Length: 288
Length: 272
Image (cartoon, rainbow over all chains, first blue to last red; front, side, top):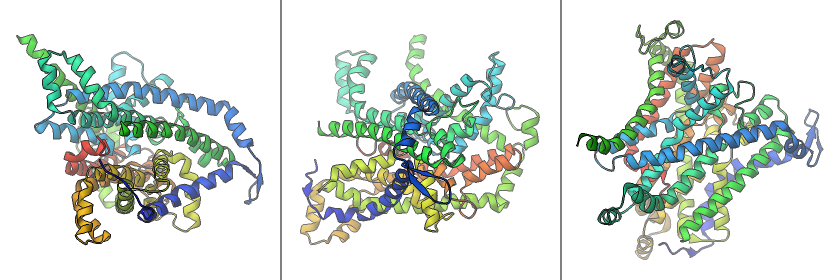
């Protein structure tokens, strides 16, 4: 273990990083705070409006609905991606050329620009020219994600599973590879079943990486914007308008600065809360 | 006997099926990129009937297209260098020293990684316009530091904490100055960590679109934004769109190939 020594001069090492991040984080955030408490009638004239914007956002049906959609979406993709990712990681080969093959192909979706992911799924799922759209309709199921809310939802979720399950796989795989071989040998001598090996050896050893996986996936899905925006544009109607899509619509589409700023701050506070939970869980693990 | 073998082979099928699932949309994209737009809209076929390279030819000869790639690669490269070089000393400080507010600072850094880009889009636009950096590569590179530096610090700190402290102490006793020790001795030791951190900076800067699109208009427009704009203006040139999409997969695939042995560890953020 590293024995960290007290050293106030360490701040000097942080300066370049602090300058860059503060420039990008603090200044824009202060702009947002500024807008959230002011009212404007154009010409850069602002009036103090207190918490009026916050009250409006918190009481608006629109915000409740996109928040609800966002929570359902994040819950759905977590419920699918985490078990699926663990299953794939467990069944992956541990050595040989198969490993590099699996890793390279599985990491591929992670490095495709997000709008390309959206466009790719769009042309895959189009009912007239897409492979998926054709196949599903060919099976006798009516499927058109541009018109049916349910189809749009399923397509968004499947797209996210396609895009991000690999992250869970790679994390779990890293956790599995760190389990020393004697654990498995001991289990074999005891005649443990495959399930028992998973339940009592692999799962506890993967707890840490799985925490990272769950929280990373939760937060990234909570701010998802580009992929569903390119795929469905938030439609049909507003049925796939998640929080970020709604926020960008208000901020850059309608240029409703006050509402957008107040919504941003509420959104950010939700994320901060989750982040705090994340951080506490991780550091507690580190101390054990 | 035969059924027993089948059961034993069954688990092997899971990753294989998953990879097939991953490759289907990519295949469809590549398939479309070799078709003319007329063929795509005309008839449904599993592979190109009239194989054509026109879409790719158009991209490689039309400056608005290939400049998009160069712009993207430019700001991604600047961002990767900036993020990693600012994160290196910071990660060292976090991994080796205790100082006032270290835990809070680390937490604050993490919150930036978790901040939704949608929250920052509008203020970034105003900030970079007001300092005259709007529509430059450096603006996008700086903006992406918001989430890449915290990530790089986090990954590098994990790797650095795996290096025994005795190495630092011995070097200082031998009379190395801090900068000399850091560059000559420490950086080579954590080279693989730097590789992983650079990989992640490349990855998140390459795939991000919302901020890159908001901060550029003509001169530094990323390829991803060129694609969305073409989709809306030039009717719907699906073949061209598919070819551009296919080309955006290639840099990522190359990078993955080079770091394949470190990927798993990097994804665990050096903390497994």
